[in-house]
Amino acid sequence: MPLQNRVTPDGQIIATPARGTMMGNRGVLHDENRVLGRARWRHKNWVACRLEFNNRHRRVMTLKRYTELFFLDEAVAFAAGHRPCAECRRADYNRFKALWMDVRGMDARGCGALPAKEIDNGLHTERAIPRQAEQKRHSARLPNLPDGAFVMLDEAPHLVLGKQLLPYAPEGYGAPFDRPRQGAVTVLTPPSVLAVFRAGYQPMINPPAVYPT
Image (cartoon, rainbow, N blue to C red; front, side, top):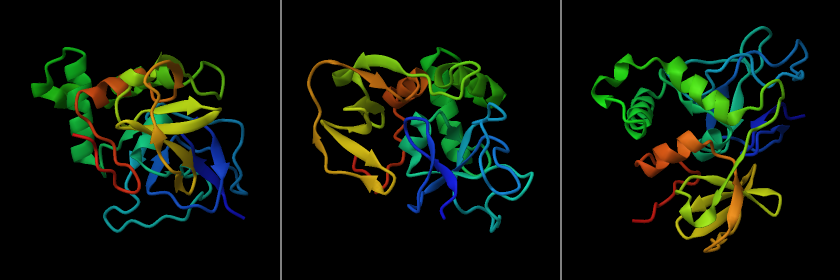
């Protein structure tokens, strides 16, 4: 039986045999039977990590160790409210942090001085409904959304990429179709992350995407 450890763009944590390309951490969410409880996070520093780093090896869902969560790709991780890990993905984290500061009019030349917890606190207000294990969502005009954003369409998550939308499934993306040129949609990706995308951050998409120029 697959473990309940795959995070979807719409904030669910599901059990699926499909493999992910990135790992995440929100603290200890499982019990001695490797079963999730009601909690969906234990701290605010939700990170998205590489699957391999410094030859480290872990038994998934070891008792009293953090619950390993998995994502199809980085676009999904961002939609679920995660950010790049500052250890195993230092270059991505620094790039994300510099753009985060830039879109807020902060001096990015000293970006090392910005504590990660400030980013995590800002993201948490945009991704989680207080005292509820539910994803916070917002509305935006579909034509204005940047590549890498996730939206709900026909009650299912879809990835925005160029002039197209790609339906999400745990195994991968379905056949793309033309993005509607007008109308508002429910957006899953936090607003601050969308601003970072607009500033130039291109999330990793599986399979590797060719971004429009």
